[in-house]
Image (cartoon, rainbow, N blue to C red; front, side, top):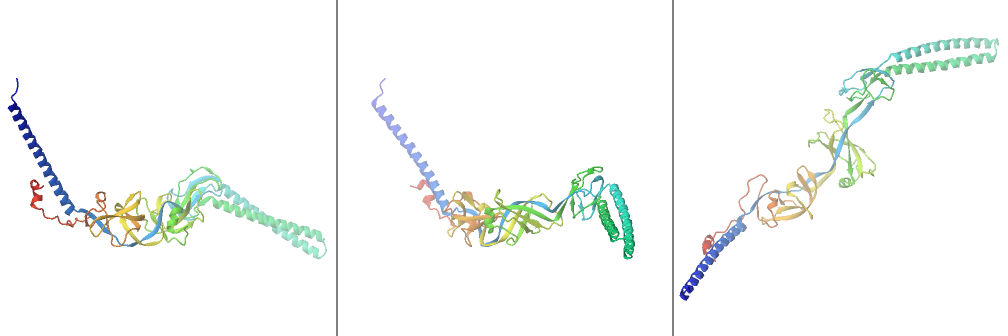
Amino acid sequence: MAVPRHYKNKFRSSWVIHSKLVIALVMGVALGACGKSDQAASQSQAGMALPVSVVEVQPTSVPISAEAVAQTEGAKEVEIRPRVGGILLKRLYEEGTAVKAGQPMFQIDPVPYQNALAQARAQLAEQKARIKQAEREENRLRDLLDTQAISQREYDNAASDSAIVSAALQQAEARLRDAELNLSYTTVTAPVSGISGRFQFSEGALVEANASLLTTLVQLSPIWVRFSLSDSELAQLGGHLNEENVQHVVLVLPDGTEYEKKGKLNFAASQINPALGTQQLRATFENTDQRLLPGQFVRARVITGERDGVFLVPQVAVQTSDLGKSVYVMNEKNEATVRPVVAGRWIGKDWVILEGLKAGDKVIVDNIIKLRPGTLVSSHAPGGAPAAPLVEAPAQSPAQSDPDKQT
């Protein structure tokens, strides 16, 4: 069935009108959204400054120092060995307790040495008797020689026998002294004061003279701390160290606290260890309360002087990249600017900044991840409430307040 021409024209006109209305509606919505977006961006650029915390830095002085892992050791670590052999009868001390110099620690069976002493005394008495008899015989022959009743040869033989007996007497006296010493050595005493170690034998064991290790003694006060510094660390301190160019040594305990007493360097190697490239050092510390024990791992901080004109900046404010370290500084226009810096070491929670800052610079210490060069910021002290926006937003015109009126 054929459709009349006037019906076709009427349908085409309706479709065109409807399409134009839809396009107009879509463009109106888009223009309204664009107007709102432009308004928000304008408001943000005009007055929405990013609140940040700033620290106004001032030059200060910090110690010139370097730290290294260290280990404590007793100033004197003595091995207790018997000077005579025999059966070990008794231990005379409590393991792990403090002992004083000269205090008895072990008892070795003294009976064999008591017998040796008695024999040495008897031999000495015999030699004394012989020397007296030889002296009397020599005196008698001297009188006969004066009357020419005997020959000179007979008198010389008697004098020679007297000298031999006198030498034997001296040997007997030496054997007696040795016997007395050996008997005294059966009581093993502490050569120094210190903390006793574990008993290595049990009662009844056979120990050898100068060979069997009975126990050890460690002197805890003063106590020594051994550590090493590399060539680069020594260069930061001004070169190789010795007792004259080191002011003092600070000990950092395993819990991070500093030991209350300062130490002194008492040994510095005269050469660099070729295998490790380090200089071996040792410091001594007072330890009267025995807070430090041998074998502890600690940190030793060597102080050689002070460095002036540096700045302390919180670690969170310093950024590291391929170009080095930098911080954000708030300028006179309240904008964040990047400042390259040269950092030294840490002191507590702060970086030591050697170059790149000047007195009065306001370093930004938070919201770093949101910052870009030129970002408008409002400052407040760390931990405080942020300040009001630094730039007021301009008043909106009627056209800006009504997106439908924007062109």
